Image (tube, rainbow, N blue to C red; front, side):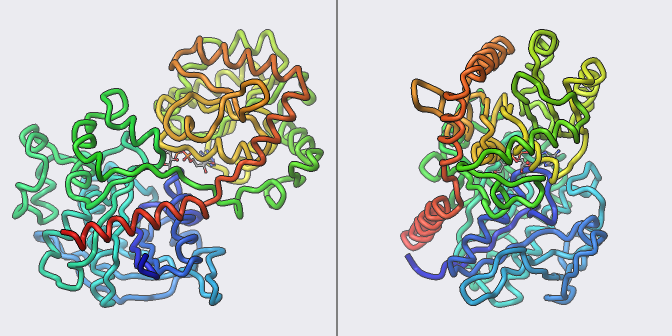
Length: 493
Ligand code: ADP
Ligand code: GLC
């Protein structure tokens, strides 16, 4: 492999600066690990209003330049700030390059329903490409992520096709979630200045009056990847393909599945600063203290005889919590368990969990909102972590749970199927169910409650989970191989 690789990572989210879900963790950790290995990485992220208001100190890097759309020149500058804990062997941190455009990104939310949403994300891709041009730096691979950066491969071929500098740059589009595709009215094509390459968009979609950014990326990226092997297979089927299964199946030879890693610098119970007590596989006493403190923090009754069930999640259809109401009252009436929920999302799910808490105040603790510290404390203090996802491209929380001695209870789909091994005689790390039904979930919970009464089996399962290693190091080997394969493809072409 040619070393170092030059990778331009382009992502709408990056922890700790801007996060709504796992994309933020992945973009930050993958870039950090590549950088620490000595690769040249440039990481482009929008400078959202909320980052500016957070007081983050950024330094000017590139002075304002115009990104031109028909009838609108948007001034864009690049500012930079170091990514935490990213020092390479020379002690140099990776600088996040923030795309500074108050017109496009000076808003409170990352994603909006505003009229110019299609222009915002075209502008982001263009600003990242132009930042490379203006510094005379050609990446081997532009690594785009999700629909927000779906236009990047086509932009590179069309708007920037004239530039010899970028002729050797390939594109990788990572799909973190097929459920979000960036679909807009087709006049977006004119508004973003791509009328001249109208024929490069999916024609049936256009005929139906729409343009789909993720689909456009799937059509034009040199390679595609997604965040687990199982999801890479699932998305080629009608059940999981969200309408794009046919296109994805056509590109199967250029579609890789690589499970996400865990940033153990951030998620390790032995060092986690968010916990009231630290612990590890050799001494689980601290976990007991975390559990007691957590029950207190979420104001439920102490010392249950049954397990503490934890949920930390976006509350959306994807995550499968609609299976819970069917049996929750039965569970809470008959067992001395606790259910602790941290999440936000769809109003119906939020109000259901609030309602459940009001009905069982001693047993159910609910925090609607986003709270990173509490997410860590639930991972540490719970006994069982619930992820009944309808679909789950990778999922990170089940891997965090394993490290924290908290047994994941998951539906077998996507990355959950690839990272949690079902309990069998003397092996396995979690509880797994298959059918997306309340009955299957309730049965599996009943099995978990049974195993809970056998502390030896429980402890052995905890220890097997804590010994799992999902660190980024191993996964980055696979990305390096993939980047190398993508570059080799270009040389063959
Ligand atoms: P997704 O990206 O689909 O939301 P992942 O499991 O990949 O799912 O990642 C979710 C990430 O967001 C995890 O790091 C999780 O701890 C975090 N998270 C989700 N909801 C919340 C919340 N309400 N408060 C704090 N962290 C949250
Ligand atoms: C998405 C998926 C999640 C995955 C994350 C990071 O938001 O829903 O399963 O872990 O992206 O890749």
